[in-house]
Amino acid sequence: MMPLLLATALSVQAAPAPAGEQVAVTATAAPSACIGGLCDADRLRPFLTKLAAARAGGRPVRIVQIGDSHTAGDQITGTWRTLLQTRYGSGGRGILPPGRPYAGYLTRGITARQSAGWTVSGIFGAAWRGEGSGPIGLAAYSQTGGTGATMGLSATTAELFDRFTVCAMRGPGAGTLALTAGSVSVTWSLADSRVAPDCRAVDAPAVTDNASLTVVQGPVTLTSWATERRDGGGVVLSNLGTVGAQFMHYDRVADTVARRELQDYAPDLIVIAFGTNDAFWPSFTASGYDAMLQAGIRRIQRLAPGVPILLVGAPDSATKIASLQAGPAGVSPACDPGLPGAADGSPWRPTAALAVVQATQRARAHDLGLAYWDWSARMGGRCTADGWSRQTPPLMRGDHVHFTTPGAAIIAGRLQQDIDAAVAAYAATPAGGDAR
Image (cartoon, rainbow, N blue to C red; front, top):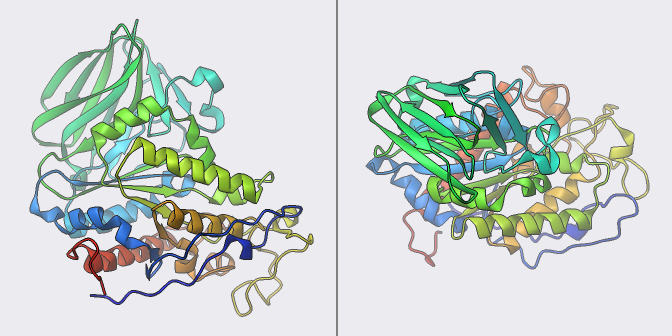
């Protein structure tokens, strides 16, 4: 077994707060142990045990990650998916927003398409239509289509599937869908006396690379779709991200829809990966963020009772905007001596709120029974974003927020390294036993 690294005590109070903010929040206790950047990994024991046995067959091990642009872009999650599936086998591509919900929508492993005739709603940005957005589920986007509207997807060889699942809204006046997976087609009427979410799976007799749907009679509102292998083991990693979103925007996902989808998709691990946009929010307060984070975590726990949750801390990032850098005294906090950007006159600094976000995430993950992955520490710590952006090749883009393909590969590799070590430490250890 790999030895565990004891974590140091943590207090949110030790992090600098934005100007005028006097609130201090202290964790009740330090994480029990960390493996690399993965703290309280023992809380993932049910997932780790299933992961260790993923090649034995049966239904795949399912990971669902919700987050911001780091998740939506699928560079990090896509590389992590490849690492997992190379080791444990592919269980399919997993849950996705239906169709192509926005310009620039990126996927790895599948190509999605849709016709004209669809209206998209989402939890943030131009797709958020207020109360007129209608029901939105796990994927953070829904689409409503009229008669004749179509969608489809095709998968790469690595992501072949034999189950195609579509989740949609039943209700008075709802229309009918024709669903096709490989050589199998079914018709699904969504008309009902009450409004409620529902999911329908179409099983193909053999693995296939294509699935589609047609609105036979509209209107129809779709909340998600998914592809999976039914009985070959392996891993499914679903990346459900929204560019620019904060965790508070996920409150716009309807409980009734998310609960039904979670029942059907049955994840073995939920990963929460927000925080970057919170740290750049001009209206950020430590107390407000802490209250929101606790409420959001408890909500996910209610919607998916008993499912292990991994909270991914916000990565290091930087800005040149002085007002966002300003600490309690209105002065940009210095970077740690010896780190890139500390002594060369670089104008790039973390936002004053970033350290508060990271410390709050770590504390609340421990307090509320989650595992925590310290993304920033696995980059090298505070003020490393500037250095990552100046590597050859660059590991972060010029915005000092998003990662390049090489940088994403490093992050995914370090996360998987810590997961591998946790599997070795806990997957074969009886609950309550000593993993050391």
